[in-house]
Length: 335
Ligand code: AHM
Ligand code: MG
View 1 (cartoon, rainbow, N blue to C red):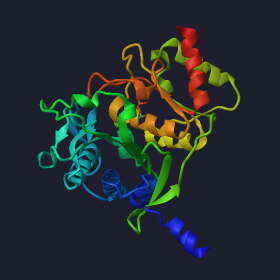
View 2: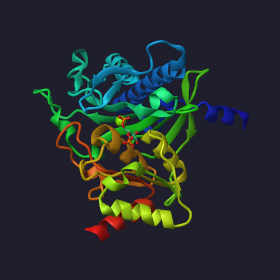
View 3: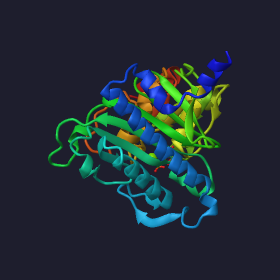
């Protein structure tokens, strides 16, 4: 029995990926190596965040504005480069696409052998950086299709069911990595003394309904009426609680474990909302579906939505099945 508990306590991320795929095939080895690299990026970012207040030049803004028109933080730049540098050494990834880069980044020495593309948001919840609050990184791995001779990466403009792996790293009181390969959702906690992500929970299934609704209510009057109607319903119904942290990775992590719904609706001025499909909404949708939840734009399942451009935005309603359906019922009434 003691052997068994030792065994369970020490399932590391890379071993878990191999177990998941039940094989030592080339694909399984690749995915294990890729997940291991994502874990390394997470450790490097977590280390820097944990010391941010003790070091010069870690916090604050760079003075630049990114492709999305958002102010760039020094941590955004650092985290973006961490992913590039860990994947340069992997040999497996030819292209990386992130929130912080207008065009995909090619690693010539890995092309065309590296048949995988990493899509990622290096720092989710950037506005939390300077106040020592939870942050995340979001990732998605896709197989590269075709040769991408024009360097436009148009093969990425396909639906989210093509993701091979997806998940997030949550930088909270402890650092956690949650991932799916399309076979359930599994969470790991970083043991800083070992420098390893250790299995915390396997095959996480989320409740069909939860008390939490998570949305920036400051935008109330900018939304379309059905969202206001949903929020009014929540306000007058007993048993709901609002939670909104400014980093959707942490809000969605809570919802994964306890149920509920996260919304980022479009507004009249910006009907597509804020969140980007390929490296924010789609990876989280893949993961939440695997945990028994759902994600939709309000019109289309997130995983069926096909982007027309790399930095495409879509509205997002994601979480427990019944709660997503409840939001949808207001949208249907309104149309
Ligand atoms: P970011 O990747 O630039 O940080 O943007 C994504 C974040 C989400 O984590 C969060 O839920 C949302 O933006 C917060 O936006 P707002 O301040 O408009 O509510
Ligand atoms: Mg983001």
